[in-house]
Image 1: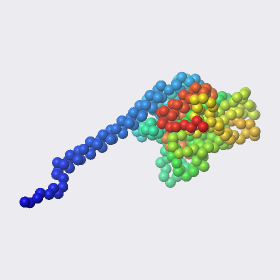
Image 2: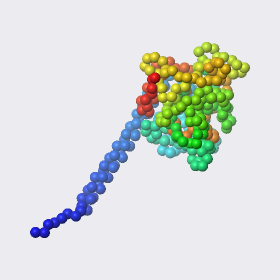
Image 3: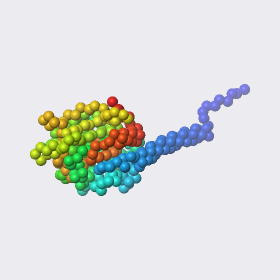
Image 4: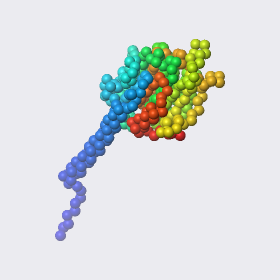
Length: 319
């Protein structure tokens, strides 16, 4: 008897396999999209219900997940306005002035949450990156007062060891170096803070990945006056660290020049806070900037650290 051998799949069998594979791919894609959308919804809910709204002296809160943060939320759209979510001060939003190049909206960035993407599209000349936004009329809220600053970002590495500016204050000139408060990645890739004289007051190694920067500028006594310069006595900077439920912040070494006194000049903050830069802009995803013009109480600090950990799925060290 002649045996019949099946030499391959029939057209129907192949069609069934292709159909099953297509269904599985669609299910995986849909599931991935649902996970991403749920993380955006969670981030939005955490911001909407954050205790930050009830904290007094909140000068600036640039946040990237709330519907009120941007006029539009299309992936890759140019961000020409980043709304200030502070309910206490009507100082306006971070806006694009004139024809400066703008960052873009990125729907899924740090832990699949929305972010503002600062980038450089110059291939052979990375030292020319001009993406920035300005917040106007803010100097009166920052001068001669304590400050608390939080920045949540994830920078791009490997850009020729050039300065990458996150925040600077200025009096409106296109060049912002040497005025007010400057927070940037230096040529050594360290997070650097400089004062109104342009001198570095802190330079710290930053590990790759999502980074929460927490800065305090404070004065325990009356402000010192040196000529026409108002000076703060205290400055501390922390990277991915938090206040434990009981106790104090981890110890930190403060490296401020000033001839013996720990101090930070505050008289020339300028009237503009610039996010990014007109020449050497930050490159990476910037999700949140929070500025208070006072020191925070322990409960407030714990609430904010808990908020950042939950929203961005980061683990902050308490030691």
